[in-house]
Length: 107
Length: 366
Image (cartoon, rainbow over all chains, first blue to last red; front, side, top):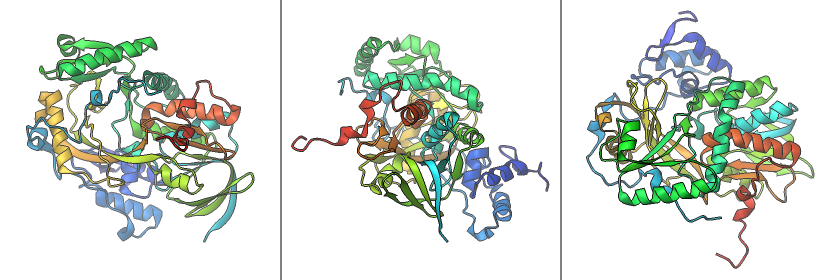
């Protein structure tokens, strides 16, 4: 491996970009992710997480076991929106902007 | 372990988009001793878990829309100074599906026109001509040219880089544990050090209440969870920022408009994701076939009455607060106005409406 080795294949992020994020203070996978997009692609960090963790461990001297793993989220693998949809037209937590418009001037 | 009393002129607590915009604008004019402290790492909180609309229209009262508009107008200028934040003034569309909302939209347009903010109410044909992927069930939409979106990661990262060049110091993973007042200084106790500063700015967003409590100041900000769905990169599908979704430069579509009061719980929940999927298909039927790669959630700051809490904290010399919803939209303006307030003692646009004093209700009233 050298600086130009691709660590995140989905987003094509190389080792140098990850090291730069660590150099400016990133300590976790998710810190690095938000700065570089490493792990934001279709595999959602399943391929790069171990590689990134070992780079973090090496550069920060934190033992590998103490480097936090990335936060996993729904879905575990890409899934179509139609599969998630239920066909209901009742909305409770999800709003529309127009719901929030209040026409009485409050001040 | 604790090192004692490193001195700064100004400490900003909170390294989100608001804290960093203040740091950037302040250090443009006065580079003397500014420190930004964050309990975590920039973008780990609200600023890194947003659709990042720069949104003006539909905000009420119209004076708040006007305030937001001034901020949106500053984005091109900010981009020239700090670098490409992928700011796109796409124009904003708020589609609606009922006749009742159509009536509401006309009233809103009338209110706005009184303040010189132009929004159009589009009928079904006009909406579909602008945004052909929207559902034919749409009744109409409000439209404003000034709305758009931004890449929040680039925005915060570039604000930090520019601020560092201007001499701002940063300390991450450094939670504030307590704050003391002396006659003309603040003593800020943190996990890593104890700092002394003359001016203190609380920019803790959803965490503002806790920060204020160290000084006996009530900052009425609650937490609201928002869940957002991200698709795989898609071919260009959306021409506009739509209230509820937007397409990023890389083709991903971000979808969501949920609000839940569950404190600091950032878990995703299937019921809200399902509703979000229903909304996606209701708005843009062709999204049914798009793949979702991630559903994230974030904690938004929500002041008690929904409006920003900004300015000097009365009764405490050199203490300032800046806490609000819509930090992405308002960041350039808040950074500018807070800098004016701190260095000049007055702001170019009045901020009295947004003072924390409005929450101190006289005894005997509601």
